[in-house]
Image 1 (cartoon, rainbow, N blue to C red):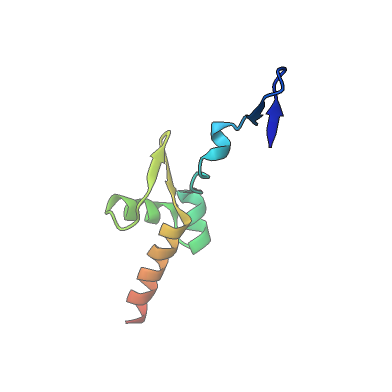
Image 2: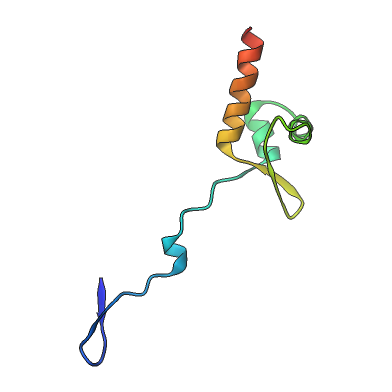
Length: 82
């Protein structure tokens, strides 16, 4: 898409820098993540503290990536089956 200037020159249409960047990764609050896998939020916080579940802290709240949570559950399912 192009725009025309008063002099008749063609310029590319303005594109916001936000439209060019990749989408931010989806983050799930630890409380919601805990409910979704059937454990208490405290249990997940302990796993974050011991390093077995990666998380980020934003303004004092913990968030996990859905793929990290899925991997965490799969690791623990394998241990339970063995």
